[in-house]
Length: 100
Image (cartoon, rainbow, N blue to C red; front, side):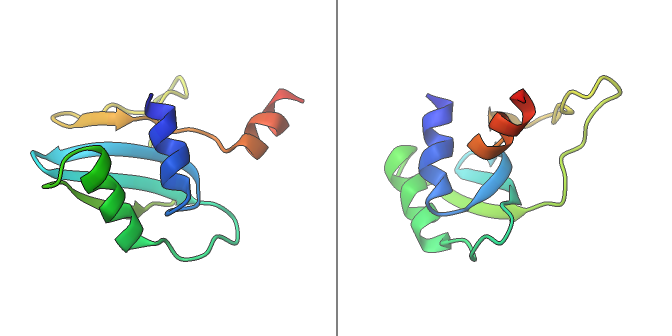
């Protein structure tokens, strides 16, 4: 089901990779690497989505990042003390390119 959230959020925040993190009881950050030539995120739509899908009190925020930290083995670093709701995901275009 987490992938369903990712695809739904793409309508509000066009991304190449993402990480959804609960940073407080009612605060969720959607951290993302923007898709190339992406329009500005629809923050109002993202907030409304968070209230509808998670809870009416949830404050969902978009946080653009340049990259996600990776460990020596190439895996994404864990976030101590944070609840990771969704992990980084490549867009369909990248997945197809990676398979070739």
